[in-house]
Structure formats: structure tokens, C-alpha cells
Image 1: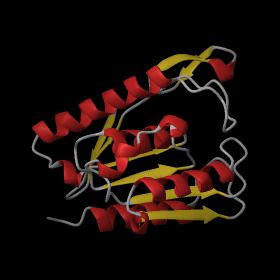
Image 2 (image 1 turned 90 degrees about the vertical axis):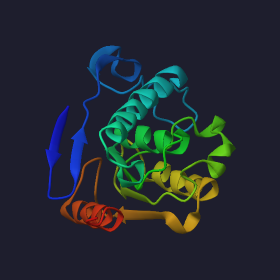
Image 3 (image 1 turned 60 degrees about the horizontal axis):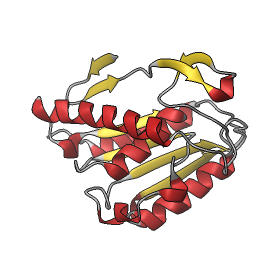
Image 4 (image 1 turned 30 degrees about the horizontal axis):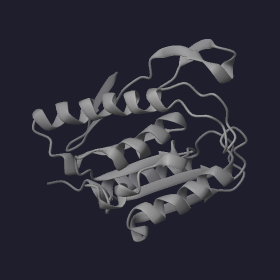
Length: 189
């Protein structure tokens, strides 16, 4: 896990553990949870997603114990990390500053608790970014996730940005958008 500081922001970049992934012919790779398939109706690793979320919640709790208010914490990630960030933000009791969800989807969406609308983060700000040419996590999944989020939390706080021609990767404009989101959500105290 890497930890970086800027004048008023501390970045913590946890690494996913190495585990066998069904979609990867059970070969081991960094993964927060098992990925069984990439279609919208694919079975999901419920227990793995929930355990990974508990691990991230423990990191949040540790930062709060270290003196950082939870409302000064942004969760974020790319692909599976973004999916985990969304799920964790919508299931934690800690009020967060925001969520960065890059090229991802909302896991356990078909059984997601509607109680999320009444959670600590019903008004959390979400920046969701997705490449229009993403073939690994298709753009449609990002778009559907945005619609689902707008039904679960304050729709005015969900921003979905599309990047023409972008595959399952990042670009300078996306990183500029991420930077602006962080600066808006975490102004100097």
C-alpha cells in the first residue's frame, strides 16, 4: 500500500491481494474479489465483495482514529477498485466526502439494499468516468450504473463523464476531471 501526502491531502493507495480469478482461468492476479463473468447477468462473488468492502471500511476507520474526519475521505478506484469504492460508500456508516468511480460498475446491483438511500452517504458526491470505447467494462455498464446511483442517492450529486474513443484506460482529461473533483470535495481546511 502506498501513501502520498500533498499540503492538505493524504493519498492511500491500497493494493488488491493476489488471488485466483475465475474469469482468468483461475490464474492468480491482483483482485479485490473473484470475477466470474463480465456480462450484466453474470454471477457475482457476494462474499468476496462484502469482505473486500469490510477491508476498505477498516482503512476508513483507521484514518478516522488517526484524526481524519470521515467527511474528508474520498474513496476511489479504477475498474474493480471503482466498483468496490461505490459498494463500500453505499454500505458504510461513515459519512464520506465523495467517490471516484472510474471505468467501473456497481457490484451486487440486483440485490443492492434500497436502504442505501437512507444511509450516511445518501448525499455523497460521485464522479463517475467511463471511456466510450471500453470493451472490458463496456460503456453501457457505466451508464446503467449512473442511472442506478441516481435512484439510490441524491441524483444531483452524481456526475457521469464520458470520454470519446477511450478504451479501458485513462486519459489526461479524465485525470484533470479527477483532480478538480478532489479539490472541490477536499478544500484546504
